[in-house]
Amino acid sequence: MKTRTENRHIMILGVGNLLFTDEGVGIHVVQSLADEYAFSPNVSIEDGGVLGIRLLGIISLADDLIVVDAIRNGGPPGTLYRLEGEAIPKRILAKNSLHQVDLLEALTLCQALDKVPETVIIGVEPRDINTISVELTPPVLTKIGDLKTMILRELDRLGAHYSLKKEVMSCA
Image (tube, rainbow, N blue to C red; front, side, top):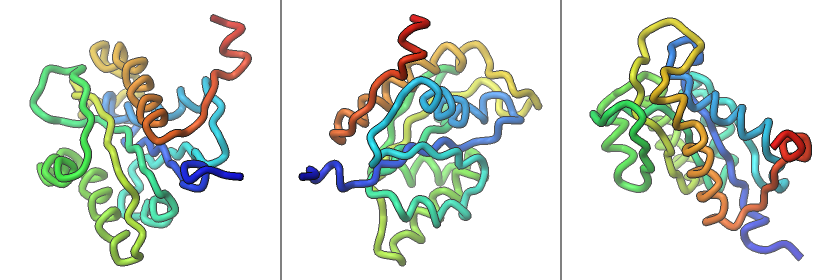
């Protein structure tokens, strides 16, 4: 018999633009999670890139949504953030990047579908989101492990199951 948690679809959604340095941190993190961990069938990992409003179709499928992104909040580069509830619109309304505004609009449009996922945004303060490069800056790169830990804690909170993949364990 499935538990309530096993019936809930949990989506981990990385957003950002891989071509602009730290703007791509969300994509780097979800790719790393997919490479290193196996998840229960009710957990999906999605590369949302810069799709913004076009994410409506996939995020409306989620009961619980964990978004991973660069968050400009005025702190030192590398500062970690966890946003939920009322804090999400306030932060995104600052229009730090176009995909964040479109993400908020997609979440708002989910209300019309009567399917708004419980949403948490996990992020890091970027150093540089303007330089064309696929490499993360050092203060953001050093936080990848912490970001993954924060996501795994969210999965624990939601009752999801995951494990390290065997090939990752044999390399440790």
